[in-house]
Structure formats: structure tokens, C-alpha cells
Image (cartoon, rainbow, N blue to C red; front, side, top):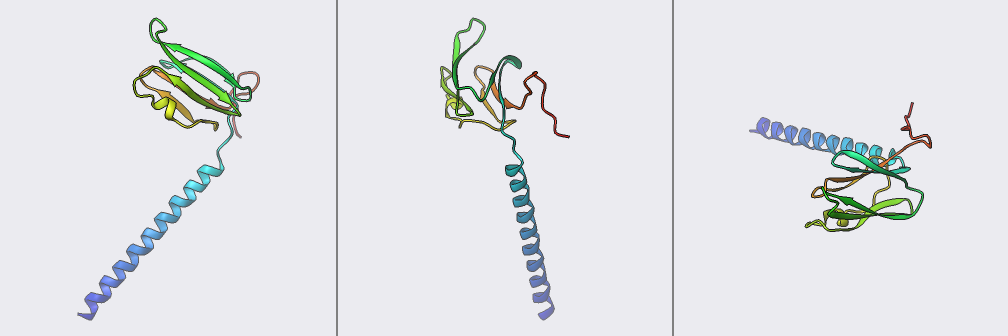
Length: 133
């Protein structure tokens, strides 16, 4: 009987140790991700997978983006204070408007009904992509 309780206690202790290790690894991964993000330099605008425009993230501007076969849809891209967001859209769900502003390389704002992707990138002045070596 005592041996059975001892085995249960050992199993519980091992489960707790495993849970703590998993939480520590997840926390370390999250911290690594958060502290290694790079501030973006360029806003890339893609419609249906094709880049149609690119704007510097450092310059404040408001850009209407027309999509659809006859330019019947509109989204308004706002670049302000180093962040990009969609302020207006005529799509039915408006998820793109509710998405927070993005500023780090790799972050996106997507409007699925209009097949629009706003992506933050790091690009050199010559148009090439920065590569960390």
C-alpha cells in the first residue's frame, strides 16, 4: 500500500516537473520572439498576391487602395507615426479596420474579401531586402 502511494507521488512530482519545464521553454521562446523583432521600414501593398505599391513607413500618409475587377472596392491605408493600418474599408466584415496598427517586419493586415495584404518589410534604399548575416 505504501509503495503504491509512493509511486503516485513520484508520478505527480514528475508531471509537475514536466509542466514547469514546458512553461519555462514557452516563456523563453516568447521572450526571444518579442525582443528579436525588427522595426520595419516599408509598407508593401499586395492585391491578389501581386505587389501594387510600396511606401516608406517613416512618412505619414493616407492612401486609398482600390481593388476588384473594376476598382469597385476601397480600403484606406494610413501610415502614421511609423505604423500602418486600414482606417476604412467597404468589405462586409471590417476585420481589417479592427486590426491593430503594424510596425514590425513581417507583420500584416489582411482584407480577405478584397484579397488585400498590407505587409511590413525591411528594405534598403535601393529596393533590396535587408539580410542579417
